[in-house]
Amino acid sequence: MNARTRLLLILMSVVGLVWMADAGYRNLIEGPAADRERELDRLTRQVAETQDSIIKTSKAADVLAVLEQFSLPYDPELARAAYQDWLLGLVQQAEMTGASVDASQPAPVKIKDRDSKRQKEIYVRYNYSLRARGNLQQVTKFLYLFYRSGHLHKISSISLNPVGGGRSVDMSLAVEAIGLSRCERKGELSPYAATRLTHDPFQDYLTIARRNLFSRGGDSVLAKTTVTAVTVSSDGVAEAWISLPDNETSVLRRGQSVETEAHVIEVVDVLDRQVLLDVDGQVITVRAGETLAEATSSG
Image (tube, rainbow, N blue to C red; front, side, top):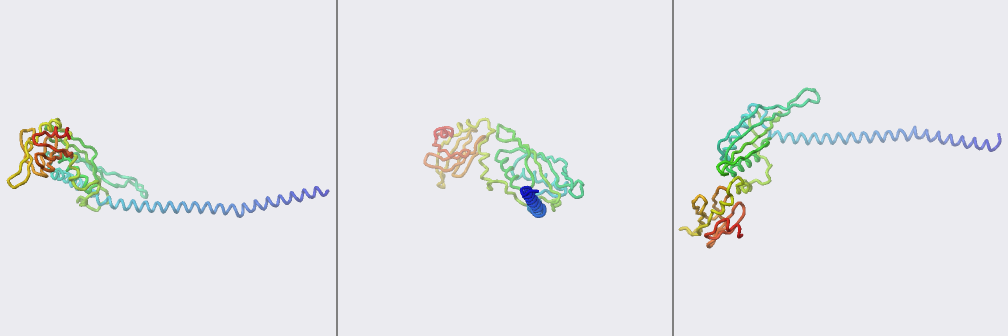
């Protein structure tokens, strides 16, 4: 064996030793270290997911506790009767007439329990149909009272059919309410008020009823409504004399109003031979002897 061959063998041996050392380092040190890092990452993700699940569960429990405060009672028959009476009372508060409420059978909603694998009731659904008659202001008041109440309920559908030339409407509602099985009240409805509405005072919603969209002759009413005179009463208060389409005359002072077939007319101020009127939320100046239609077009 010559010197060159021995040198090649030595180099090959050195290369083999280096490769074996590198492979051993990877298998004995780098491999386990990488496995430990992967396992640590997996455990970290699992802990984070568990923490998120605990937070979500806590939040869900808090939300559920709040919903239970607004739920219908847990006894289905008592809940159905109590809510039906409440709807009728709401119609009376709104001063509507001809009220009738029909209630369907309570419908329990169940899910499969995670542990026992059995069906478990979580809430009961109640469906009602309500009919009543009133003007737009009374309908607005009913809806205002409905959405201010603290119950788990909603209006699924509503229809308004004008009667009497648009002075009144027949209101038909489909209402759905929910009673949670964990509610602690047996037959009493929730005493709490809700915060669903953007504005709290009912007066903020009267603009909905000021312009009667169901009236057949909205513009003709303004053309037949005239400020006939501006006078001062015996006690020194300025008054506006307003002739209405039905040939009646209303004598109004500041802040007073009159309701026509299609409009609500309120006296904002009474000046010398002219009156400031709020007609459906629009303030116009009407001179004595001028119709509201003329004042609206000129203004």
